[in-house]
Structures are given as structure tokens and as C-alpha cells.
Length: 298
Image (cartoon, rainbow, N blue to C red):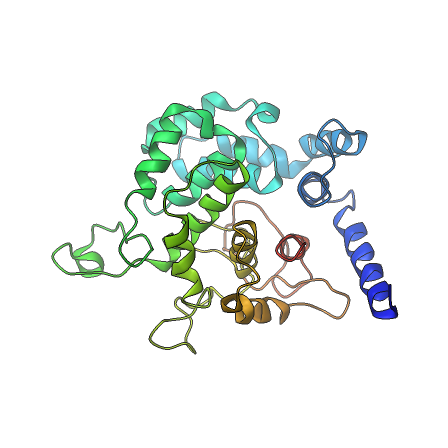
């Protein structure tokens, strides 16, 4: 290995050590299980899970899951999915069924991310979840995306033709990436991937210099019903095997523009009340960094 390669390995090792710090057990757990591929029964993973289950961030998510309002419960599932936990570890089946019963899988614009979370958590085996996934994917439009579901005629007049909603479609990309990891059949994979590749992921087809939706090129985190960061999009594209496509080059350049000299990535934006607190805007962020690493691994 040449000097440059040795330096890159040293930087990577330092970043991994940072991601594995015990003060953020949720980051540590997903880094161990997904990025470093440690087996679930390993001592390191079991210790990380035990620490996470004792952490305030986990207890807060569990409290959200017990609320009556839909969105706190929705956010709890997003948190658990982002941390890399599964239904076997969480024992939350009754809470998940309650959310499904209360929303019919349609919490306003949140169906795509809800389905993604359910797959990541291991609920794709439930018949009603599997049925809803394929029913939702069957609604793909001719342009390869998914339409706005608003009933406001000023926004989404059913009498007029409309292009797909990039915000919602982004979360469908996250969904099929998780389906790919579970080796599920994806009937619209090519069409959905092409929707993003023909836009260099986040740019307009009629104006390649203009972002489809302001902020999609930024390192937004954690994902929510209508916003997804560039690191999550590239992670999904990588899982789907298309990250080396030339159409992804500019998206990676935007992601790399958020990289500091020490190799860590900065959080660009976050929701005012996110599903969980992931860090401060403008500061080095473990979650964005982890996604960046996973989006570029061999």
C-alpha cells in the first residue's frame, strides 16, 4: 500500500473509533452491526445494545411510541429503524399494529418512510405490510416517481396532469433499498432508480443547474416524511448497485463538500423537532459520516 493509501486507512480508523464512542450507543450499535458487520451475538454488539436500551434517547423513543398522537409514534419507529434495531430486539408488535390500525399506512405524506421503517425493523413478513408495500409500489407513475397525495386542489387538482413528488419519491427509494437488502422482489426498481439517475439524483431535468427541491442536495438528517438528505439517497443508490453511475458524480461532490479535513461530515440541516436529536447543524456529525462511509464502501 502506498503512502496515500496508508493515510486514508489511518483517517478511516480514526473516524470509526469516533463512531464507536460509548457516549452515542445508537451510533455505535449501527456502526458495529451494519458497517463493520459484527454478528448480533458478538460481545461488542450485545454490550452496545444493552447500553442503548439504558440510554435516555432510547427511553424517549419508547415513550413516544406509547403516545396517542400518530406522529410521535411514527417518529419512534424512524428512530428505531435508523439505529439498526429490529422487532425481535424491541418487542413492540402491539404498538406497531396500533399505528397501522390508526393510520391505515397513510399518515398524510408519510407512507413511504413508514413502509421503509417497517421493512428495516423486520415487519415485511406481516401479510398486511407486504400487501401494502406492493400496493403502494404499484402506484408508480409514468415518469418513474410517485404522485402527491394532497387533497388540496390548489396543490394537487385531480383534473390536471401532475408530475411526481420528488420528496415522496425519495422515501420510496429508501424503501426499495431496504427491500433489496431483504432480497424482496422489487417490481419497479429500474423505473424508480432511473427517476433519480436521469436527474443526477436531485436536479431538474429541464434545468440541470437547479435542484428539484431546495435542500435535497444537503446533508439533512434524520429523514422524515417529506425530507431526505443526500447521504441517505446515495446510501440507497449504493445498495441498489448504481452508485458508480456517472449520474451520481455531482451528488457525491455535494456530499463531499460537507466533508471536513479530518474526514468527518457536517450536518447541514435537521427538522425543528426531529424524530431524535442527531447533532448540531454545522458541526461534524456521526450519522452523516456513517451514511457517507456506507454509501462509498466497496
